[in-house]
Image 1 (tube, rainbow, N blue to C red):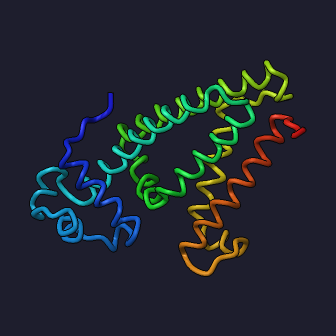
Image 2: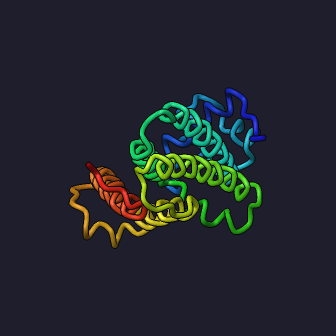
Length: 209
């Protein structure tokens, strides 16, 4: 069962997320967040304790919401063809990782010491594996997919490739046409999605008619 947040906490977390995405964690102050959220600075300490602890709660909240959205998304596409479902799952996972790229440095540090955060991610990853497995089995049964790689391996490939691209901008920007940070993120995301389509569907032995 995930942690329950009050409406006021969710409001503050949404404001913090917006500012951190725009200015980065270090460039966002508690005063910035409180001013935009139209609350007293002391309220952040009351609800979260510190900016660092608020970041943990923000990630916790984001994982919960992403898991809920992915469940809803999976339900929407469940009656589609296996190849369509796989494409949409790839696009969804890569898109979410790029959308919330500001969390990854923080998460890498927190995972070393925070068991609750590990558990949150474990539950989400296992849910992704379950949905990928359902699509794989449907594709094999219908003859659309020739091979059946392990669903956890497919997820690992998607996550690993995407996170490498996000964390190694100084390398990736040499291979992505861009004029500024915003265009870089957009073009890098497109590149990773295209790469993952080629890689995953090759593993599946899928041949487009």
